[in-house]
Length: 502
Image (tube, rainbow, N blue to C red):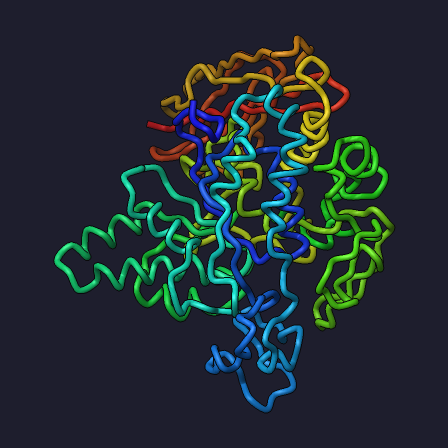
């Protein structure tokens, strides 16, 4: 076992870049409870159009004159929104993030929680390991790709190493540190005879995910990455998680988990300093360096001044936001097979690569419910409450996930044939389990006329399904077994079977 507290395995390999917006802080704090499920190999400070720390000498327009439309009241970036400060070009820094916030978190709040987290799962990384992978990237100016940094070097070396796993690069701010790493690889190899091999390695290995369409809260991905790496893959989950508007706009079936009563009881209070640090609207937290309009902890109001986003007031202790968690929630292994095939589904529904056709519109940043409720995200919220207990309680006092597996993950059959779906389920805490098979049409491929596709006995672990007589070769029927334990703070896991027509 290594210092990071895990053995080598096939967990998703992840590097995060963050501009330390308050919702990034929340994403980090929530991620702390799931660090046992991912192989996080880097957490890197970067910049964005919303946060840059400057170098103490230059203004933004001196470093990035091509980003600025001189004479305009406010310039626009690729996001389509005006810059939050119309005079940003004259500034030497803008809403600078607190240097050392991550390091302090690992040494203090996480270290305190780790004593209990590690008893609930041995795979949690040590505070010392997290300190070792926390780096400073290109954080001085928006869109800054002028030079290599410790952060860009970490990304570059991870791309070029011999680990054959997919490398997920999660952009929680500007993409510039990620782009700088890719630029450095191109600068070293593009004019050599091995460029074709290196290019193929990058395209095969790297997957980028970021909250803003087009990747990142600056223009560097479009300006510097796409011209050199036009085939690089950008991933987008089907459903939004954790927007600033969730307490009022999330799907009604689990909106209560974003509201004050639930959060005070299950997260903010009584769960140690790690969850106590989690930011909520009107919780009294003051953020150094932030303008008054962004002091959500003092004034529970969201008013960005954009035409399409109305002014909203929130009840104190309402959910504030995890706008960047969308990049990692779909990576968590709960038994769904979306990383194997994006159409099969994840906690955030299906996952699409940029440019792939979507059957329906994707999520809306404001209204999370516009594309129908995502039943998996309710389970994710419920697990948040269970894992918050892990911060302060030993194993015997906490709830843990059921262990679920399908007897056959892929079943082949012919039209009209009856096939059997079987799975096993057990609970490490000895809790009773409730299980239910359901058909997942969004992750299936079938254009026939049957309109009532289901298994015969959905409450049994072993059941049957008759393939419709009009099914065609290549059709796929996606069935999911949902298993939840009977606990005060339940946890849900899944088994997934794809019935394929021969």
